Length: 605
Figure 1 (cartoon, helix red, strand yellow):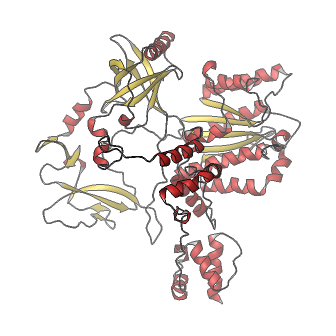
Figure 2 (cartoon, helix red, strand yellow; figure 1 turned 135 degrees about the horizontal axis):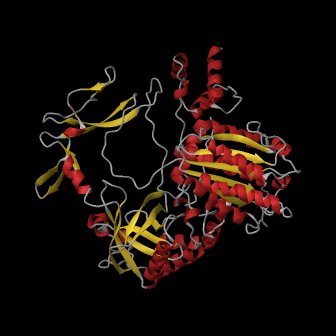
Figure 3 (cartoon, rainbow, N blue to C red; figure 1 turned 135 degrees about the vertical axis):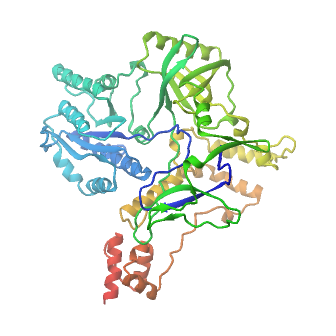
């Protein structure tokens, strides 16, 4: 719907202010939520964790800390409200409050922050020998460590949606001859279920066997079906923490006149979230809050100045309040205006839940893909008969190659949406795809009027050129896995933020996984001469590395002015270093503060 005042019209203006003002914008209900989740890393510190892997050269204990730090880096880059904690067990030192022998909290639970990141980064880089000295070979206090971990969660007063303990160890068969101690551990893990804690165990040794002991612990804590159990690998932990599956809605699915099943709808993917832009006052570096206001539009208005007066903290009389804005839809040449009551009635015609419209033969057209799919399955609170009926429906739909067409209202007072339900017996539910309308589907004929793929204008392909490309495709063929490819733009932004926050002289850019690897380049190298000959391409004309960005030089007069006004912070480290290099001044240290201090020392001479 468009927004307008029925009489005079409005203009939307974005304004910045330093006070906290709530956004006054109408927006659709979001399908993706970002509730807080808390994850505690419980790391085994016994001597076996410090044995170097002969093949990879990795030390399991340091590998665990690196994984913890890497996840913290990504969460800081995403600006998430998630909480992390790091706890060690099997140590010669331990916490005193509450006192639990051989269990040491390295980082207490708190929202991820740059201070936490700096602290763990320093410990990893400079204190590896200290960790070895902490290792204790006389005890394996797993029961006490699990109790201490559950107590750590109980001290978190912030609302947390998902709570998880990640246990990293090389010992797959603890207390092999002590069944009483194993029973104590199982009883302790059973309390995790009541506390809403999820336990995941990751084995760090090549011969680690989850089936011996830890599989039962994970099933007890999470109350999962043993048939659907899947062990978690270290490589998958990053994805599970950074992109967890979210429950969008828990509602009733009305399949027939008297058949209702409680179901939950989950996300199966997470949209890419780039670090948020923060607007600041250039003079004071104070963060500014942005918001949108609507003002009356007059016929002679060509340019609009800010309507917000910071000194008075109020808006002038031209600003239109939310109650003065009407919504309309255009039908033909007329604007049909709806008031607030009429809009509310539109959304109240449908009850919250899933309503079955029909079943039809399964058809999947990739051009109709308008948003990421979701997944629907029965809730844990469903009765046994409801679970059996749901499972039977999934099996029958897959056997008959049918899909369901359903209308879903996630919440009350929200517009319903139409979805196709694709059955998946393997997953035990339906993948649901939003049903597109005609204006949602792209018409490529309009976008690419001269496309070589149009049937009425086929391209005459050269047999020799086709043969070369067939060879290239054969040499570059890989087993596709979406997790192998990272977003290079997002990785670069996070690297920039990390370098700025940690005062690094140079940013460490992650490799671009979307580009061919060196191994693939070696495979196609023998074919490239033939490729260049056919298409008349010179080797030097091929795309090379991106040009190095030149540093903007600052002359002595401008630098002296910045020194007098204490504004050297406005320059980059590269600019400051270049200035010192021109004046043959050596710098000890890589941090920006040290480089700035060297500039001040130069002008004090």
